[in-house]
Each structure stands twice: as C-alpha cells, then as structure tokens.
Length: 341
Image (cartoon, rainbow, N blue to C red):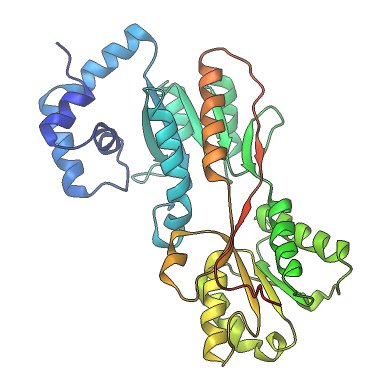
C-alpha cells in the first residue's frame, strides 16, 4: 500500500501541511524538522509513490501558493502572514494540499512558476506577487494551468488574468474622510517614493479625492514620499517637527510608518491624538504592541483570499462563474484619532 502524506505526518509527529512544506523546501519550517521529515519520506520511498499516483489520476490534489522572494523576512512577514493564513485555509477546506513557494527557488535562481507548470506538479496556482516575469506568464498560458492573482496586479498584466484585490483608492478616501469627519482640516499623507508600488499611488488618489470633495486645502508639501518603514516615520517626526505643528491630521499609508511617526512625535513633545491625529493602513498584528493603540484601515484579506480560492477551484472544475474581485476596506477605531472635537 502506497504511503501518504498522512502516514509521514503520523510518523514524524507533525501536520500534513508541515510535511508538504518540508518536502517543498518551504523557508518557514526549521532545518531540523525539514531534515527529519525528508529522511522519513526517503526511507518510505514516498516520492516514487506520489509520482505514480499523479500519473494515474492526472491530478496532484495540490495547490501552489506563490509569494515574492524574501516574503518570510521580518520586514515583510507581518503583511504576508494574513494572506498565507487565509489562502491555506481556503485550499485545505477543498481537501487539497496547500504548498507555499517563493517566486524563485532559494537554492538556485530558477522560476518556481515555470517548474510547477512545466512539470504539472500542481493543479493550480494562487499568485501573490507583483514582479512576475513575462516568461512565467507565458508558461502559465502555454501549459493552461488554472491560476488566480491575489492582491497584487503584476507589472506585466494581461487582461485575461483574474485579479482579486483591495480597492486602494477607496482605502485612501476612507482614511482621509474619517480624519475630516473627526474635525481635521489640515491633513498630510505619507506615501511611498517607489513608483512601481501602485497600491500607494492609488491611496494617494483616494486621499486627494476626499480633500477636494470636502473643499480642504491641497498643498504639495502635504504629500510626503519616502520609504515605507518604521524608521522613516520616526525620522520624519524629527526632520519636519515644525511642519507637524501646523497640521492636525496625518494619513500614513502603512502602519509601520504611522507607528514610527507617533513614537517620534511623542519624543518631540506632541500628545497623540490631542495635538495631531494619526491613522495608519493595513491593521498589522504589531499595532497591538504599541501605545497609544493605532487607528487604522483594515484590508479585506479574508474576502480577497476566499474568493480567489473559489475562482481557482471553479477553473479546475471547468466551471465559469462570476465572482466579486474588488473589495473595500474598513476603519478600525482605536486611540490615535481625536473623536471628541
């Protein structure tokens, strides 16, 4: 009788998902666990058995999830963890294996998309990457592998590709509107200086839309473009302390920037939100570890991922259904926006 992932998981004392990740060199698994699981699989001649099964069934019962190279690093992990959690859960609810890959192999600079599609190693792909090479997109089309794009619109985007994402223009509008409705009249925003990151430019469009609709002052100095990280927020608080004394609200288009800004402003003697209101974007898990608690925009990751998975399995099963693909964010009210004006 052929050995299964479940058998290996039982022998190793881990979950089936962990076994799958180990066999696919997922960076989230410790080297010790990966080595032990691979040894058990080798001893049980697992690889030969699964290949034989795939040849007979013409299905792998596996879905590949593609993230950017380095997504597991600290500065990216808190963002991608939510996407990963919802995508894996959705796939496993369909009684399929979810296997996480980076865009390129860690051992050598080779495309995992081409490897998986050319070898028919998965039944479908959920791709959450911006920088997808044209060669990878062509491999998807050539091999007719079902796939959906999650959150990111690739820089090389073909109209037939299905993208499930957040309405970033609405997010920018929503955050700015919230500040205005709570008494702010001079509102700045901190956005990315990277022109390739379209989600930030779209949030800025939403910010400007709200400013215009409410007939507030539009000043080029109110739009600050920089690197989106904690250090930037803290640095700007020191470099532009005089400027921050002239405004009453800031929309930081990333939570880490907001947290750094608040820390820097408090060091400069500001009281948050009494002197200036600050709203972030993303609702990252780390906000729970900072005081005052950050008011922020929460992205609809659960809805995005659920619908992307549904669409992928519709493709696998030959079903053509119309599903919702663009989703709106909501405000998480906490302590950094003054509400008793």
